[in-house]
Length: 123
Image 1 (cartoon, rainbow, N blue to C red):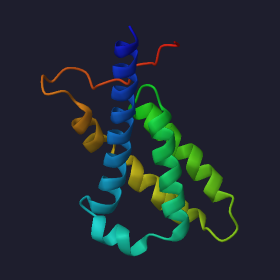
Image 2 (image 1 turned 90 degrees about the horizontal axis):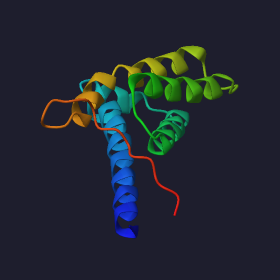
Image 3 (image 1 turned 60 degrees about the vertical axis):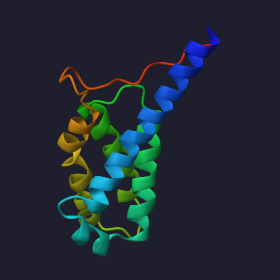
Image 4 (image 1 turned 45 degrees about the vertical axis):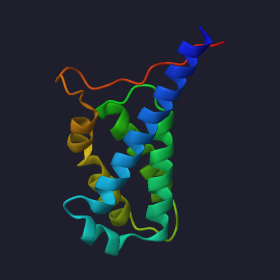
Protein backbone atom coordinates (compact mmCIF):
# COMPACT_ATOMS: atom_id res chain seq x y z
CA UNK A 1 0.00 0.00 0.00
CA UNK A 2 2.87 2.37 0.75
CA UNK A 3 4.36 1.79 -2.70
CA UNK A 4 1.11 2.88 -4.35
CA UNK A 5 0.91 6.04 -2.22
CA UNK A 6 4.56 6.75 -2.97
CA UNK A 7 3.99 6.32 -6.72
CA UNK A 8 0.97 8.65 -6.58
CA UNK A 9 3.01 11.24 -4.68
CA UNK A 10 5.87 11.03 -7.17
CA UNK A 11 3.45 11.21 -10.11
CA UNK A 12 1.73 14.22 -8.61
CA UNK A 13 5.02 16.00 -8.08
CA UNK A 14 6.22 15.26 -11.60
CA UNK A 15 2.99 16.49 -13.15
CA UNK A 16 3.22 19.70 -11.13
CA UNK A 17 6.78 20.28 -12.29
CA UNK A 18 5.79 19.59 -15.88
CA UNK A 19 2.97 22.13 -15.79
CA UNK A 20 5.19 24.71 -14.12
CA UNK A 21 7.96 24.11 -16.62
CA UNK A 22 5.60 24.42 -19.56
CA UNK A 23 4.21 27.72 -18.33
CA UNK A 24 7.69 29.13 -17.89
CA UNK A 25 8.93 27.80 -21.21
CA UNK A 26 6.02 29.24 -23.16
CA UNK A 27 6.56 32.64 -21.53
CA UNK A 28 10.28 32.80 -22.30
CA UNK A 29 10.62 30.62 -25.39
CA UNK A 30 7.20 30.60 -27.05
CA UNK A 31 6.16 32.52 -30.14
CA UNK A 32 7.03 35.90 -28.58
CA UNK A 33 9.85 34.56 -26.41
CA UNK A 34 12.64 36.77 -27.75
CA UNK A 35 10.54 39.86 -27.19
CA UNK A 36 9.51 38.65 -23.73
CA UNK A 37 13.08 37.94 -22.65
CA UNK A 38 14.12 41.47 -23.56
CA UNK A 39 11.28 42.95 -21.50
CA UNK A 40 11.59 40.71 -18.48
CA UNK A 41 12.33 42.69 -15.34
CA UNK A 42 13.38 41.40 -11.96
CA UNK A 43 9.84 41.66 -10.59
CA UNK A 44 8.46 39.68 -13.50
CA UNK A 45 10.88 36.84 -12.82
CA UNK A 46 9.86 36.79 -9.15
CA UNK A 47 6.18 36.90 -10.09
CA UNK A 48 6.61 34.09 -12.60
CA UNK A 49 8.37 32.01 -9.97
CA UNK A 50 5.42 32.56 -7.62
CA UNK A 51 2.98 31.52 -10.35
CA UNK A 52 4.99 28.36 -11.02
CA UNK A 53 5.16 27.57 -7.30
CA UNK A 54 1.39 27.89 -6.96
CA UNK A 55 0.85 25.75 -10.06
CA UNK A 56 2.97 23.00 -8.53
CA UNK A 57 0.78 23.03 -5.42
CA UNK A 58 -2.49 22.85 -7.35
CA UNK A 59 -4.23 19.49 -7.15
CA UNK A 60 -6.12 19.83 -10.43
CA UNK A 61 -5.05 22.12 -13.23
CA UNK A 62 -7.79 23.78 -15.23
CA UNK A 63 -7.98 27.03 -17.15
CA UNK A 64 -9.94 28.58 -14.29
CA UNK A 65 -7.30 27.54 -11.73
CA UNK A 66 -4.48 28.66 -13.99
CA UNK A 67 -6.03 32.11 -14.55
CA UNK A 68 -6.86 32.47 -10.87
CA UNK A 69 -3.24 31.82 -9.91
CA UNK A 70 -2.03 34.43 -12.40
CA UNK A 71 -4.62 36.95 -11.16
CA UNK A 72 -3.64 36.41 -7.51
CA UNK A 73 0.05 36.95 -8.18
CA UNK A 74 -0.61 39.89 -10.52
CA UNK A 75 -2.74 41.64 -7.88
CA UNK A 76 0.13 41.39 -5.42
CA UNK A 77 2.61 42.97 -7.83
CA UNK A 78 0.14 45.65 -8.95
CA UNK A 79 0.40 47.10 -5.43
CA UNK A 80 4.19 47.52 -5.61
CA UNK A 81 5.27 51.15 -5.97
CA UNK A 82 7.76 50.84 -8.82
CA UNK A 83 5.66 48.55 -11.02
CA UNK A 84 3.21 50.11 -13.43
CA UNK A 85 -0.30 48.69 -13.82
CA UNK A 86 0.42 48.41 -17.55
CA UNK A 87 3.43 46.17 -16.91
CA UNK A 88 1.36 43.94 -14.64
CA UNK A 89 -1.43 43.76 -17.22
CA UNK A 90 1.03 42.75 -19.95
CA UNK A 91 2.57 40.12 -17.66
CA UNK A 92 -0.84 38.69 -16.76
CA UNK A 93 -2.18 38.71 -20.32
CA UNK A 94 0.96 37.08 -21.67
CA UNK A 95 0.88 34.20 -19.19
CA UNK A 96 -2.85 33.64 -19.68
CA UNK A 97 -2.58 33.37 -23.46
CA UNK A 98 -0.43 30.25 -23.06
CA UNK A 99 -3.17 28.14 -21.46
CA UNK A 100 -4.17 26.46 -24.74
CA UNK A 101 -0.59 25.38 -25.39
CA UNK A 102 -0.19 24.10 -21.84
CA UNK A 103 -3.49 22.24 -22.07
CA UNK A 104 -2.30 20.50 -25.26
CA UNK A 105 0.84 19.36 -23.46
CA UNK A 106 -1.23 17.97 -20.58
CA UNK A 107 -3.57 16.08 -22.90
CA UNK A 108 -2.91 12.32 -22.86
CA UNK A 109 -1.99 10.67 -26.17
CA UNK A 110 -5.43 9.01 -26.34
CA UNK A 111 -7.13 12.43 -26.66
CA UNK A 112 -9.26 12.14 -23.54
CA UNK A 113 -9.55 14.73 -20.78
CA UNK A 114 -6.37 16.50 -19.62
CA UNK A 115 -4.41 14.74 -16.93
CA UNK A 116 -5.40 15.63 -13.37
CA UNK A 117 -3.13 15.69 -10.42
CA UNK A 118 -3.91 12.82 -8.09
CA UNK A 119 -4.60 13.79 -4.49
CA UNK A 120 -2.13 12.40 -1.98
CA UNK A 121 -3.55 9.97 0.52
CA UNK A 122 -2.74 10.45 4.17
CA UNK A 123 -0.55 7.67 5.50
